[in-house]
Image (cartoon, rainbow, N blue to C red; front, top):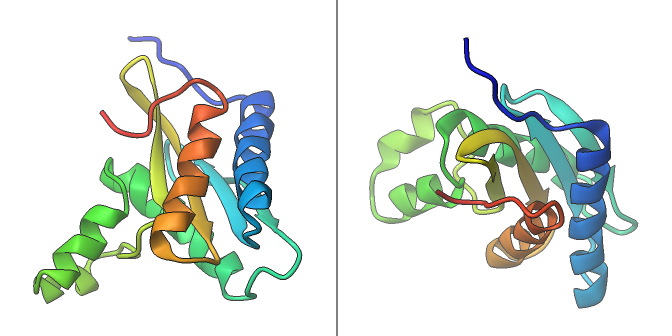
Length: 137
C-alpha cells in the first residue's frame, strides 16, 4: 500500500478563504466549492449576490476537474473547437474547475461559478494557492 496526502477540514477552510478573498478583492460574487479526490463535496459557499444557478454549477466544475484529472477548461476548449461529443461526457465543459495537487497527487478540486469563465478560474486558483498546492501538473 502507498500513503498519499489528503485534504483536511482546515485545508478546505483555507482554500475557501483564499478563493473568497480573491473574489472580494475583485468585487466578484461567486459560489465556491471544494471536493475531495473522489469528487465528493466538502465545501459549498454562495456569496451574497452570486447567481442562484452558480450553486449548482460550481460543484460540478470541481467534480469535473477531479474526476477527469484535468482543469474543466480542457472540456470547454474541446467543445469550442468543435468536438461536440464532449457534451455527452459526464462533465461540465466550463472553465472554473481546478485540481488541487499536493506532492504530485490530486487530492481534490475547487470549482467556482458566478462571473466570467477566466475569472472563475482565477478565484479557484487563488484557493488552491492558499494551501501552497498546485492546480496543474
